[in-house]
Amino acid sequence: MAINKYTLSRRALLRGLSLFSAGMAINPLMSGNVFAEEKPLKTIKLAWGQTAVCQAPISVALKQGFFKKYGLNVEPVNFSGPTDALLQAIATGQADGGIGMALRWLKPLEQGFDVDLTVGTHGGCMRLLTPQNSGIRDVKDLVGKSVAVSDQASPIRNFFAVQLAKQGIDPDKQVNWLQYPPDLFGEALRKGEVQALATDDPQGWLLKKQHDLLEVDNNLKGEYANMTCCVLGLRGSLVRDDPATARAITQAIVDAQQWTADHPAETAKIFQPFVPGSVPVDDITAMLQEHTHHHHSTGAQLRSEVAIYVDELKKINVIRPDTDAQRFAEHYVPQLLPAESPHQHASTMAHMGNMPS
Image 1 (cartoon, rainbow, N blue to C red):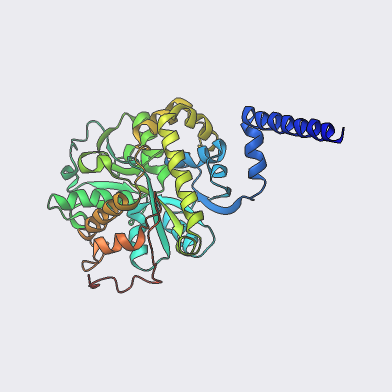
Image 2 (image 1 turned 135 degrees about the vertical axis):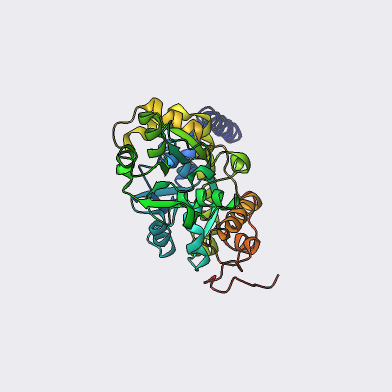
């Protein structure tokens, strides 16, 4: 009888285990929760320009759980200042990372800021706009004209200055760049104080629509069609000391960028509450569709793009002529995806010029 009792209890145990396993298979959420509770989420601070439409994928990553998918608890920091100040915040540890424009960040990096660029997030948010009757049909037509910019170190100014330099035009001497608060761009154009606007989205897209402006140029033409303009920067010490977390942040951003490219209308609905001025969801969708959120370069591809920008900024005397563009890119763009490679980040780039190869 004792043997029979043991047999029955053993059968009951196996039956119970079988039902439990079946339940876990039927309800994968239960299984995921069991394992998720074993490892707490890693908390990071991510600076976010909440009004910049090109940063909409961050709202997607928060809403759709992309950060949590990779074990991250992201504390978004609303950063409304200039992107060079954002870079400083990352370098000094006030934030673990953030997204900014490459053409704004490369000069501070050359000067030694301890920030790594881990993914290019998209292209296509810089625009050169002018009235339909201005007679300006090409960048070279800016010679002798006045152009509104947000500041003299604006990445948008730098981009179009590079295009002028490529045509043999001195952008500092032959074009008059006038600084205005961005919300006065339209008024400056209406009064005739400037003949063109060098601006980014959402302002650029909205001004073009509101005033029926001609888009003379942008960063989606020619060789720029498949280049990033904005990049994710991570604190250098985070990449060095905790590459797994750096990789997780980078992958979450990549996933969110692709989701945005695949679902622009849904992204617009998620992001619309952050855009000032009650911009319609359809307008935000149209902006997102013009950006290349499917282009999220990492590793060798991002290094190539950064090196191109470094060489181009030399043409307008922003980057030192003796800075080796390829070594610069290798120094500041770690290989985090799909596999990590050694990345030793020096504390300064002050002597990058003439570095031995």
